[in-house]
Image (cartoon, helix red, strand yellow):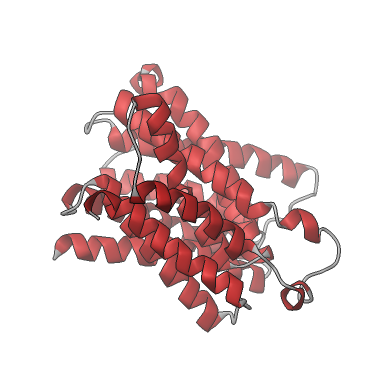
Length: 299
């Protein structure tokens, strides 16, 4: 029962993060500032849960620390990309592109760790690539809702998000295998959040000093409302993976499948996102692809 509760928590909270960017757009919240405050909130929340700030001077010499700094750069870059994609194209597209990126760690695992993928898993990888294309497709009616300027480059957003999220997942997977122990796992994750918070704060302060950014309390408030669920979405995911009855190669796709489906339905109901038949076909293929990737070895 507990793994299911943690799975539901991960799905709902992760979907909330993508959906929150549509709310930020509606209330004219500055997305970048909200994301920076989000990562500051993640560090504070994680330290409270941990019982103390886990990043001590000794951590700087750990092998994982330099990778955590790189992870922080990817964190803040991709979180902005998720927000931008959700606002420009839609929550469903952002969710599918982000969560189908799980095929990239699989492909890298083949080359780096000698793992093999064949049969239905291979079919799932091919379907995943097709699903990203179909879900991102915009017909003439959907294009009419967009400004004419910059429309073509917006089509690249899901693919950039797809590649970037896959590389981030691959980095985390590699560092977890090579450099992180159960005792240092929390310090590694908070180090990544801390890196993203520091980088974002420097950029944000520069924006304030040059008058490009204007501080507003709603940006800070939005960051807190995003940051706390952001931390606990990862906490629920870790708890779910530790207690899941399936192997991680199945557990992660099941989690992603739930996020894609839940966030798409919520966006359709709450924000009336215009999804064409081709988009719905892409979402359906995404479900099938994730299922094949998760359970292809058992078929």
